[in-house]
Length: 358
Length: 112
Image (cartoon, rainbow over all chains, first blue to last red):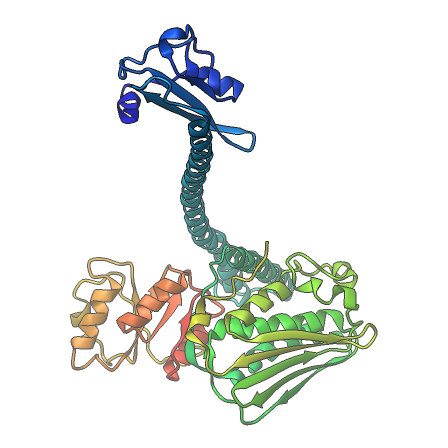
């Protein structure tokens, strides 16, 4: 009968008169009529003309009204006190069940909305990546072509300005790449391109070549302490290079004199990398915080060269490779960052690195 | 730039019709073939297959030039049998180094 009523879209307004159902809903009290002929407030239900007794019980969960349980019988005096008690309990149970069903439906709806937002995010990241890099690439390409003389001779002054322009472009590209990386990480979208022949010697060499220009104006020496029996690693070449570069360029940023040591040690099933500097060190209170996005130490803010994204990205890249990263530092005594990377990545780890950032 | 790439001869075709025939007409057969994935009438995948089927060309290193920067798509290139990939737009400063490494036999997957 309920389906029939629903099909005909029969619903009771809360202020409907003389509806018992509406009254029960309003008052939140059971209404029991054991002889409908004697009751003025009773309206006949056209689907159940032989009704003699009626019991109407509101279904409540806490303070909330979920609905009304309506019972009609062809027998007069059908609903005694015990019956009402049983049906009241039933009404409570149905209320809970209905509410659960409603919550579940809402949850399913939210999950679908979330999935669509998530997909939109991925597409956005992919196209943003392309849109941002393409014009910057054009700037860098053309500037370089002019600077190296492909378009004709260039005097020293011109070359100097073009080189500075190129430096700024490269810096901008790094910032864009960092922002895109952190976005991917936070969206759980960081994936690795895994190769099984990552040669750490080649990557160390690249990193050293990139850092040495940054140190040429400071009394800082970059020292290498690399085992001569390093195995080939399984991992993402570009990301491994990136994580080393992040650590070494941080060290270069914060060390004004002394040495920076880049070490790589064979530890059997793992390789242990370390970057040790002679900078101001990091106070214990900041040692966990600096791995979070956009957090920098006071010294970092003073230097104002970065985005505060290098370490969080590095942490995610290490995690994606199933490795570990930790810091040992005392204020005034420099900082040592250690990274271990397994030689063989667990294949499940390929898609990790979407670390828990709220 | 050819010197920086450690390359002796460089030939470029602007579109891909009669691709295999034109390659075989070259004075020397190539060691490295760069294929743009998104050209017509034959796309990069079709050309890759044509190269691999040709007795003279099948040992050349075939490198995909792709506009994609997504790992998943480059993985697909690797799975299809390309020996490497370089993403577009090409960087004037990086390109010679990449070619030099490819010529030296390295498998280069340069995705931006």
